[in-house]
Image (cartoon, rainbow over all chains, first blue to last red; front, side, top):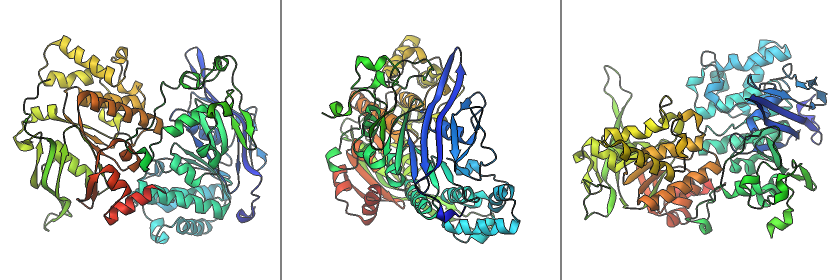
Length: 335
Length: 265
């Protein structure tokens, strides 16, 4: 399919019932608890949450890269309308790096210091597209200039230590685009970078998604980044999606109490908030054991009622494109 | 609490007098090395009990300045005065009771092979707190302040979360009851929710123990929340300093203007 004429209203990736579990003693921990989401072409879906909420595990489950003791299951995982789930197992390895590719967090750790940038870039292309080296090289050079790396010819023959951190991250972005993927999974791509570099990389993401029409799953805990690149947001807490909706809705009128508390943790740079500490969420994240009853956020929630502890809470629709996993009425909280 | 070297007349916890640090660069065996000024002619004062933020981009000399104040790096020119005494005249052993650092990466600053108990006890042993009951009392008190449950002291740092590790690092810095704490990006490796917790604890500790903070960060929103005064560093010198509100919302220097504008992206 031509990458410029991709249908932008149909989801390029749609996951349903994505679950990651791990045994711990006699308990089963649900690191990711039947998560459903869609990623649309040319749009960015942000996955936000504290560390340990299961964001990265979700990404790994999509790629079939969960570490050893963890088991991942799914009901279906459609990438461009092809289902990659067989017998509840995600089997995506044939198209990993091709239709769906990953941009890891730490650029230095992801690149091999003993191979040239070019060698690492063409590898995936040669494997998946079965093209010639010449094609691969010209593709790599094209992408390197697209991610605004100066003098791609020279860079192509250089090693990672000759490039700065920001440049290495750009190389990884270019590398992930080698096979014209339908979906990009970016796992905290800016966390390891300086503030000024972060802005550059985020701008690059926005431009690329516009130009190429790829769907991006952007994993982060930085709400600045979310409001900069995101179209939709899924907020995760203890392995569950607790709220989903558009960026403007979630950033300006969060419905779930957890999203509210999380947003109030961000220190604000304006005069009214001078000298005011951001409010912290009391307590800790509970272990997501599989037979947990009721709401996982109950202990730390300010608007909790007794009913919250009784049944597992379902994600329910509260607006046109918004879902929240809370039984307390949204409007009563706001009053 | 014994304060052996405190000069009662002083109001300044930290005073830097035209500090300069040169680093040799491009040194070869036969060619002469050139000198680069990482910090050049920096003077400022921090009042006792205040929280002063030091902001600037990476490479601006923030860390070098902090190291000079901590006595880890000797300044090429100028001097540091802590609690009214020149740093050079304070014996190393007493320095630890005056000034302590907390670093960015909590996992990297705690020994993974030691239990929390021994991490916190070691500074006390080194500094001649010989009574084991006294040591335990102080450990328990400091753990209570940073909200780590007492029964967890037998564990190694790896069994704690990032936020808890940072709180342990803060506890270790405070166990000798210093008056000044240099916080080098203490929250930039942490989530926003954990960051809020740590900032809260730091603020509580400051009022509880009457600490003076030098808070190094590049996050202006954090500066706005915690600090009384701001020093803006650019290319090795301080380009602007003053009350937080003034510097952040009415910047005078061009670089500060760029910095505050880029933070509001």
